[in-house]
Image (cartoon, rainbow, N blue to C red):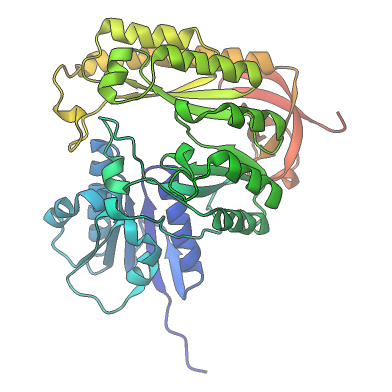
Amino acid sequence: MPPQPPKKKVALSTLGCKVNQFESAAFLSTLAEREVEVVDFGELAEVYIVNTCAVTARAAQESRQLIRRALRTNPAARLVVTGCYAQIAAQEILDIVDQPLCIVGNGFKDKLVEIALNDNHCDLEMFMSDIGRRKEICPLTARHFVGRTRALLKVQDGCNSYCSYCIVPFSRGRSRSLVPELAVEQAGIFAAEAYREIVITGIHTGTYGHDFTPATDLVALLRQLVTACPLRYRISSLDPGEITPELLELLAAEPLLLPHLHIPLQSGDDAILARMNRRYTGAAFGELIGRIHRRLPDAAIGVDVMVGFPGEDEAAFRHTYELLAGLPVTYLHIFPYSKRPGTVAARMEAQVAKEIKAARVAELRELDQRKRREFYTDQLGRVWPVLVERARRGKPMNGYTDNYVPVHFTAPATVANTVVRVRLDALTADGVSGTMVEGE
């Protein structure tokens, strides 16, 4: 039997959000079915795939750095650039590359693997379209997430909101949803691959189903998922207006939907919210958090906050700080505003100085730590289900409770990727220490 030729080596690097991570997992799942070898991005390969991000100017810079890194590692390689930066800034990529190049827009990601492995290529290939005209979500199927205990299930793409600081509607297009049958099918694949928990994600997850005729919504999809595929489900970020009474009732009634919500506030000042083109007020946000806390008193509530948006003076920042300080939220994700070329906010006057933004970020981070400690302290003595992360040699097992408290505890390695019951015992520097219990 003649010797088999060596497998083509392919390397992939991913920047950005959970949607990008799902899409890259789908690429890797398809590559696993082909006669190729997937290698680390820093290794010599014949094909490099860069799944880029453009949400900030820094993300765009990191995307360019990865492109240059691939070309330095193997100038003769086939380079495939996709993702949001490729969608909105193809010319910027062409300006930094003088080798053969393939650019795949977000509307063609379902064809990316075939494009990447095509042996017949020229100096420049561009698979692009007007993403704003796309009516259907790009169909992709994933099987594995390397190094992850939880699977990500992308059910929605695109955004119709056009917040003044955000480039995403231009890079991802209008809101488009995955038909429920395919969402259930994808969940079933994850179940067959022994995933115990799924994170429902999208660019604007709360608008799921609004583009269908007749329209449906996220609550209907969640009901289908827990019935057809009874795994544990978390929901990724939802805007305030998308957390309906029906959703709260379902979360309260269905144990497979975990008590954890992540809600972007961005600012607690009404004038800044209006400049951001966010369609709620600080008072409305506060009322929503109160309703969630009353209906789901043990739920973790995470909040996104943007600091230093143009026009944010000290009074506006105080409105944000005082609103958050007075609410029963669990943790904060804090981002200093940075100009994103191509957005309305980048052209606004009254940009905030870098050192002022840094001081405000530091103040909110102290509040974040206080909120986390208060929430974790309230949970001490409780017993919660925990999905155990993969075993780590010589270290305690770790995972997150249903309500997103990070906990570490002593247990045999065999419990990795299973759900166990853990009593929360004491605060630690990075969460809570606990004890695995049985029969309680």
